[in-house]
Length: 434
Image 1 (cartoon, rainbow, N blue to C red):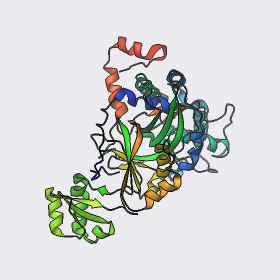
Image 2: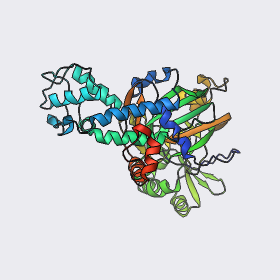
Image 3: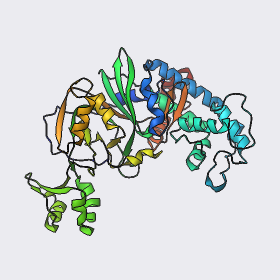
Image 4: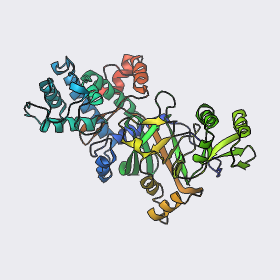
C-alpha cells in the first residue's frame, strides 16, 4: 500500500544492505512440497501443514526435472494452433466447445488430467477438474471456468515455460538459507507471503497468505532483504509527499469534506497537529512545510497493524481496509508497500517468541485505536523476492512476469559467454543462460 514516513522514531539499528543472493532463497523455499496454490484464501489453508522443505539441491533437481518434461513438450503438435475462444467469452461446465479435443489433449500432456482420460462430448466431468488443476498451477481462481485469463495461460507454448524454468534455476543457483531461525518471504509475482521456521537446513511453513503488491505500471515493489524490527499497532499513516501532491491534495481541493471523512489531520514540521481543514494548510503541504496524516481507525490506509523492517525505500507489510481486493487473481494495486490478507496470523508468527502476546492481546492492540510501537526481541530477515516458476508437491507452478524481471534476466543470460552458461546449468542446463 502507500509508502509512508513514520513519525514514530524508535532507536533502530542500521538496515541491512540489499543482498540479492539471499533473495534467491525464496525461489528455493517456494519450490517446496506443499499443497497446490489457489488464488483464494481458503483453498490454501493446508499449506502450513507441510512438515518441512527439502534441501535446496533437491529443489534444484525438481526444477530441472520439470524443465526436462517441458523441453520434451516443445514443438508438440498440441500447441501448433491456439484454443478457440469460447462463445460469449467464457466456457462453463456443461457447455459444448469446438476445442474440446485439443483442450483434453493439452491437459493430458501437462499432467492435469489422469492418463487415459477420454474426450467428453461436452465440457464437463473430469475435464472441468483438469482445468481446475491447471488453474491452481497458474495462480488463477480454481473455478473451472475458462475465461480470458485461463484461455491465455492454456495457450502459452511449452517453449515459453521452458524459459521460465531456466530462469528459475538461474535464480536458485545462488540460493542460500538465511542465517536466522525464522524468515518471511514474499514472492511478488505469486502475490503470496510465507513465514518460515528454519532448522538444520530445512524450513517449515508456519504461516502463508495472499498479498497485494506495488502496481506494475507506476509503483513497483522493490526486491531486497531487510530485518523485521518492530510492529506498529493502530498505526498513523503519514501520506507521502508524492501521493499527497498527485492524489490527496487535488481530492481535498475538490471535496473539503473528504478531510474529515478520512480522519486526516495536518502536521507541521515542528510536530504541531492541526485538526481543522483550511486552504492555508493545503498550501503549506504543497510547499513541503506541513504533511497530511491519517489517524488510526477503520478507514486508515494501513489498516490496524504495520510490520516494519527499515529499508531505504520505506517499504513495509500492513493490513488494509479494502480486503475485497484479495479476491482478485492479479493483485498489484498498492503504491509499493505490501498488504497482507491475514494480519493477525502474521502477527502471531512475528511474536511467536513472545508468549505474553496472545492472539487476544494482539487483536486488542490492533483495534484499540491508539498507536503503539512494539520492538521485537529477536529481529529476523524479510525477503522480497521474484520467481515466476516453482515446483511444489511434485507439480510445477507458473506466475505472471508482472514487472518484466524475467525479460531483463533473460537478456542478461543471453549475453553471458557459452562456457559460463554450461557450467551454471549442468547437464540439464538452459539452452541460453545468463
